[in-house]
Image (cartoon, rainbow, N blue to C red; front, side, top):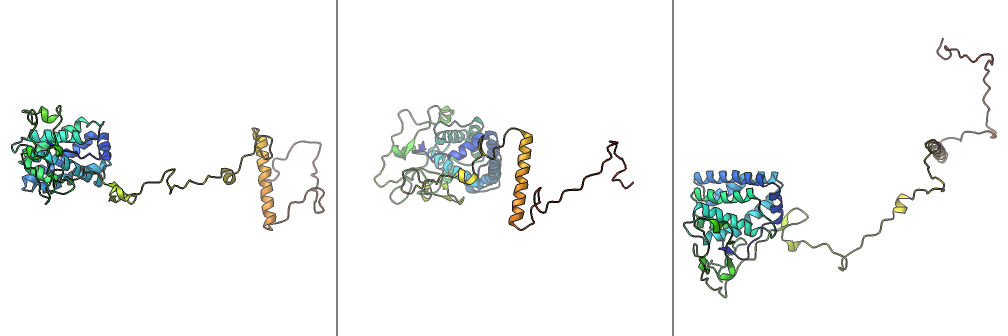
Length: 331
C-alpha cells in the first residue's frame, strides 16, 4: 500500500532526469555502490543513505540538477515509498523492494509523464541493492519516511502525534489514507505478486483525532536563490490588478529620429558616387561649423572674399608634354 494522496516528484527534477536518463542511472549506480560499501563497513541506514547522496550529488550537478532540487526529490521519494516499505511484509525480498521503488516512482511522476526505461531499471536495482545489503524493508521504510508528524511522514498520526499504522499491517491504515499499487505495475508482476488480497483489506476507520501531513510539495526558490515557501513570493501583478502599472510607451521618433524619405532633404539615394560626395560635403561642413563654434580658426576664403589670393599660374612649356622623371626626387 502507498500513501494517499501521493507526493509528487518535482517537475524540474523529472525534466532534467529525462533529458539524460543514462546519466541519471549511472549516478544511481555510483550511489548504490557507496551505500553498499557503507553498510559493509557497519554504517547505519541513515549514514548509508548519506553516503549515497554524497556520491550522487556531484554527478547530479553535472546534469544541471542543483543540490536543492536533488534534496527535494529525495524527500519526495522517501515520503512516497517509505510508507509502502513500512506496510510491506517483513520478509519482503530484495526484488520486492525493487518493485516497490519502481511503482512508487511511477505513481509520483506528474500525470502524462513516462519514466524512461534506464531510470526505472535503476530504481529497481536500488531496491534490490538495499535488500542484498541486508537492509530490512521496515527499517528502510522508517528511515525514508522521517519522524511521525514531519513533512515527509505521510501516514496518519493520532492526537498525540503517534503513528497509527503498524509495520507490516496495511489493514491498520485507514482506507482514505492509503492506496494500492497499480494493477499493471511492478508489484503486480512480482513473483509472487505483492498486492492486496482480492477484495482489499478490511481497513481500520479514520479516527476523529487522526491527522495526516499535507502532500509533500517542493519549496519554490525565491529571487535570491534561497529556497522558500511559495507563499512567501508575491505573484507579479497582471492587467486588472490594483497594483498593475502599464509601462510607458517608448518614443522611438524622439529617441532615434526619422530617416528622411525620398524627395526630402538629406535623403541618400542609390548612386554611390553621389552618396560619397554628399557625405564628404556634410562632414566638411560639420567640421567647419564645429571649428567656428569653438574658435578654432577662420573659414577658408573663397573667390570674391577680400582675403582671397589667387594661386600663381604654373609655367608649362606647351612644346612638350613630357615630364622630367627626376623632378621632385632630389636629382
